[in-house]
Length: 602
Image (cartoon, rainbow, N blue to C red; front, side, top):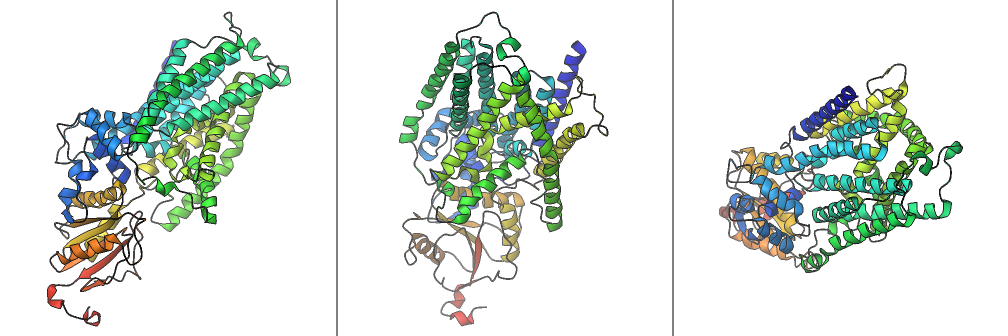
C-alpha cells in the first residue's frame, strides 16, 4: 500500500517537472503584446496616461511606464485599474508583489519576472488537476492522467507563458469545480454537504471573480448543470442503474443520511454567498473606466463569415487543448504535414475517447460525476454561443477565454482514456502492441508533449502582434531617421507601439538610432474622409521634424493626404505580412527638395 502511494507521488512529481520545464522554457522568446503591457504597467502602479499624445516622443518616453515605481503600493495598483482599465485587481496586486522579488537588471521591468508568475500558477495547476481528478472519480489512474494532460496541454502552456491572469483563473476554476463535484456527490449519497465546503466554495468563487470577470461564466455553467440535475432528480427520482445495477444510495451506503432538501438549501446558500461576493464589483464597474477596448469582440451581423467564424474558432480552441503541431511555421510544407498529422490523430483518437465516455456513463460509480461535468461543459459552451450570437459579443475570438471550462474538458478526456487504457489496477501494466486502447493513451501523451514543444518554440500559439517581424523590415527599408506613427484611441494602441519600441530596444539595432513615435489621438467615430484629426496631427508633426525622414504609418486608421516632399515606398511586390501591424513607409526628402513637383521625386 505504501509502495503504491510512493509510486503515485513520484509519478505526479514527474508530471510537475515536465510541466514546469515546458512552461519556463523560452519564456521570454515571444515579444510582449499590448495586453501584456497593460499587465506590466498596471502591476507596477503606473499609468498609460503619462505617455504624451499628438507629438513626437522618444523610445524612452514611450517605455517610461515600464519603469518600476518604488513608491507605488497595491493601493495605487487598484487605483490605476479603476481609472484606466476594466479588469478586477487581484492578479495585478499579486503581480505587483511578485515582481518586487526580482530586482531589475536595467531601467525597465523584467519580462521574465512578469511571465514567471503565470508560469508558476500554471505549474500549480498540475497537482490541482490531480486532486480534482481524485475528488471527482476516486481513481488514481484518472487523477494521474488528468495531471499528465494538464502538464503537456498546449493551451495550458500558451496561457502560462503570457503575463496575464488566466492561469490564476484556471486554479480558481479547478477549485470551484472541485467544490461543485463534492456537492453533487453529497446529493448522490444523501449526506449533508459540510458547511466548510460551502464556505470554501463561496471564497473560491469570490476570488475567481476578483481575478477575471469571465470567471462568472464558470459559475453560471455550474448553476445550469445543477438546475439540470435537480430537474432530472425531480422527474426521474432514484431508480436502479443500467442493467439493474445499484442505486446511488445502495452503492454508497451512509449512516448519517440527510434530508434531500438540506443539500439544495446549502447549495443555494453557496450561490447567494457567491452572488454577494460578485455584487461588490457592480459599483466598481459602474463607476470605473469606460472604454472601447472590447469593441474588437463585436459581432458583425452583416457579414456571413462573422456568423460562421465562432464555430471554427471554438473548434480550434478545443483542438489545442490537446494537440497543436507547428501549423504556424513559416514553411508551407511543415504546415501541411502538421495539419495532416493532427487530422489523422483526431480521426483515430476520437472514437476511442467516445467509447470511454459511453463506458463512464454506463457505470453506476461514474455516471453522476461524468454527467454533471459534461453538463457543465455543454452549459459553458452554450453560454459562449449565446453571448456571441444573441448579445453580439464574440467571446470565441479570444481562445484564452475558454479557460472558464478548460479543466473540465481535460478531466473528462482523462477519465475516458483511463477507462479504455486500464486493463488492471496497476498503472504500469501496459502492453502497447497487444492493446490498441493503451496505445491511444500513450499517443495522446506523446502528441501533447510534441505540442508543448511546438508552443515554447513559437511554432504554435504565436502572439497576436509580431513586432519581431516588423522591426527587421524597418531596419532594411530605412536609412534615414525614423518616425513611427499610429492613430491612438485607447491604451491598446499605446501597447502596440510599446511592442515595437521594446523590440527595438532589445534588438540592439545599429541601423535605427533614436527612433521617434507619434500617437495621434482620434475618436474613431469623429474621423471622416476629409477631416481626420490624426491626419492633421501627422502633418503638423511632420512640419516640425528635420529632414530627411522616414515615416512609418503603422495601424494608421486615418486618411493620409499627400505629404509635402514625401513619396511612398512601393511594397507591392515584396510586402511581408506582419500579424497585428499594417504598415506603410513614406520617404520624406530633405528641405532642398521643397518646391519640387511630384514628378521630380525619386
